[in-house]
Amino acid sequence: MQPPASPAYDAVIIGSGPNGLSAAIALAGQGWKTLVVEAGETPGGGMRTKELTLPGYHHDVCSAVHPTALASPFFASLKLEEHGLRWIHPEVPLAHPLDGGRAAVLHRSVDETAEALGRDGFAYRLLFERLTEKASQLYPDVFTPLAFPRHPLLMAHFGAIAMMPAALVAHALFRTDAARALFAGNAAHSVLPLEQPFTAAVATMLQMSAHAVGWPVAEGGSQRIADALVAKLASLGGEVRCGWNVRTLEELPRARAYLFDTAPRVLTRIAGDALPAGYTRRLNAYRHGPGVFKVDYALSGPVPWTDDSCHKAGTVHVGGTLEEIRASELDAYEGRVSDAPFVLAAQQSVCDPSRAPAGKHTLWAYCHVPGGSVVDMQERITTQIERFAPGFRDTILAMHCFNCPQFEAYNQNCIGGDIVGGMANWAQLVTRPVASLCPYATPNKQLYLCSASTPPAGGVHGMCGWNAAQAVLRRIRP
Image (cartoon, rainbow, N blue to C red; front, side, top):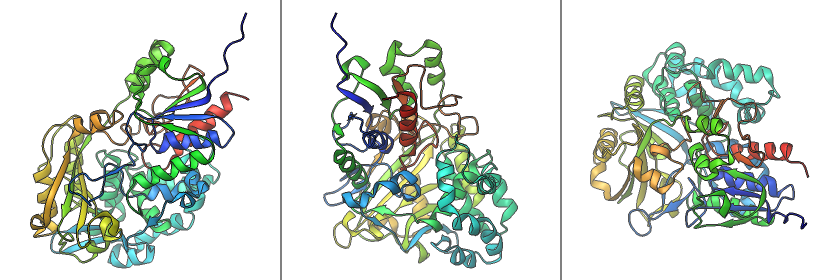
């Protein structure tokens, strides 16, 4: 009798997003022979940059601004700058224009932000001063939520606010429309109604990170993050193969472990009967939330914002007051398209001139819509920007739009246009994709999930992949 053939690889990772590449790097760093398989023609998942409109205009297809990348303990350990990645910080991380030519501004400094918020300055310092000072201690606990916290008192301080609905926190802590809108706009990154528990966690994390590490862009585009991760993996002996759309496990090389940087239902489709039927049903019941409609603009010049702070900001939240943002996010969640959507905009070219020809600019903008929506939101998004930047239409040279089905066609993990890996409501925040002491592991000892559908959820931070790799290393001994 012949002994079984040795595995061709120790680990095969399906999907080359930030988590797939991070899982591969973490395993390769432990001496595992790793292969990353990617359906697209280039690696990166949500970290890709393309000339979507006109020659010379480089648009980030999905992720654009990266506070969680700098906050990530795993990314910090990789020294990606040695592999060609350069972070650029805009003068102002975030501006939130309001009617009347005003804007709420999130500065790098807690003090500067608080001073600009006037009578809400004291409450702002009370919320963010200590968290910002201790951010480097807090990040490991936030990014590994299923482990016992290293700093339990600090985590309790963060959790006391984080577990609350953002609308409640904004009204309880702040009195001005500027401070409330600033908090609400950040909370809307949760892609949930602001009345839901834990929406304050996203706002608190993002605003704290603006002060602690900044909201940078990658010089040349988000693709450069993927390129640096691929280079790091290659330095450890790992491989990446693109243009391979995996359909079944049988087509993959033999390996000790297979890690899926995919949506849960993509895992079940590929795994087939390698997973128990009951577990497959639980994965397929995993809920995805609202999708997005995105517009990339090629512009003849900078966006003509009424408030000067917006010209300096890498990110601009366009949607007015807390009440307006609440209404827009509730519409998307309940299956309606908003006539006045909350728009998340990034103007990378204000600090990275490589994004557009000399004197020209790019603008990246999207809003939340019901999952699977095919409604064209371009005019509504443009109208919202024009509201706070009169004359914006006159600067538009070309546009490129993505609706929900087009996002899913571009990346099969964006189910219904959901770009954050699944609904992050209280029921799925930590128990994603299923309630388990180890959500990365499946009943099959060879199969693992390492995508944003696992804790700590969405963002370009690689920690879902790192956490999954640790689960593999604990479960499969040398």
